[in-house]
Image (cartoon, rainbow, N blue to C red):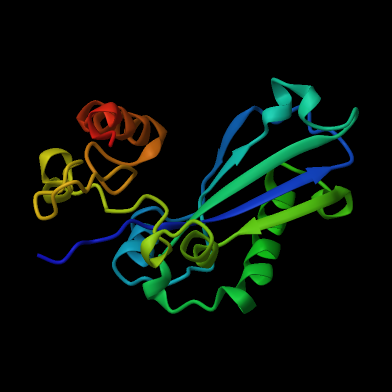
Length: 197
């Protein structure tokens, strides 16, 4: 069977020269659609004009992460992986501006006037810099036959001495899954002292 890969993410990191004290550490800014947006991302592989966003403001709980009187943020927007054909070299700034406007219109008033630093991570970056196949942020989609035992095992069944670790292997994606995967592989690896010459 052909593997199905997860969505990707558009991530915008930015800092402001003012604080937004009424914004929590973790926030969701939901768009007008849910099911149809998911279909755009997973089935149609279409970059939609609307989005739902996760906004992270770590300076709420640790103000030392930004200069005094400033704030640090990142915002995640789920987007299709690179099979969508989206040219992120031309689309990234356009998409970032749409997100900026949405945040400005909802929970970060006058945001555009207060941005002092900005950096983006696109599906192309997930592929090129992070070596994620198709720019899929979470490797394989978490579907029944790609979950748990059905995921690639940590010890290759085809090639002796090959061990697999990371989001695309057992037990799965996300930081806890990747760390668990590393622990499994650490326990599987033979002791290097047994191979001394």
